[in-house]
Image (cartoon, rainbow, N blue to C red; front, top):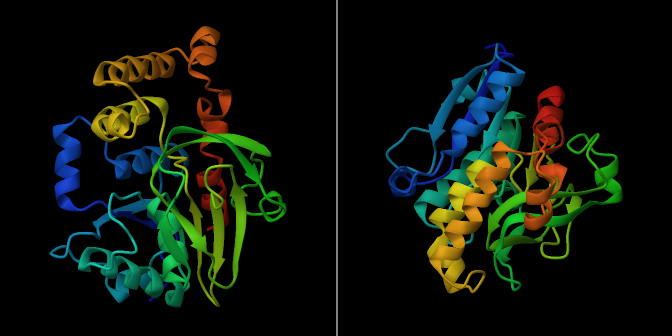
Length: 279
């Protein structure tokens, strides 16, 4: 069967209960952010969403994979080194994509999936949670010459919300970016046929959506002493939403210590545009 050059699969990697929690707490679904991006940059593309963390939901068939051009993986609140069925079925799918020669890209859970499926290792970051706007993500030498990070600033910020990180790299893998908190912020993994580009940060998010996610994670952020109380979380997220509406506000930028790199889609979404060009 021939390649359907416009077929892109989107894998929502959150389990059903987590998606219900998103709805209950007014948090956006990451597959919708990806659909929004694709509608703006490749409106002719055919897309299909799979909820691959749900054991009762079907995975792509071999026939569908044979007609697929590329796959985009969302984040997840599962833990990849706890090999429960909801995780294991995703790892096996990622391995199959390599064998089929399909090109994938994914953020957060995506980088952890890319590393794990190719034989690497993920563990809890001893530095704790990286959240909100991560600072000082820096291209490595390989990153400066990579397909994924072409035209990306040498140092940039990114949206993050994670506790785990890649600690052992599989073979045929290059580290493309790092920062002081997380030593592996972007990678490219190549098999004999397919590839998997992964970022620990989220190029698909914006300030409004990150504000909603931070508000939903308020208890964890207070418990981990990033905020003193829930009122501080509310005040902070309201300011993030205001800056999203008023990105030219130098006062808010300075107060929140947020630069143009996460405000300007031309910079923030560069990885996704590069991947589309690649496939």
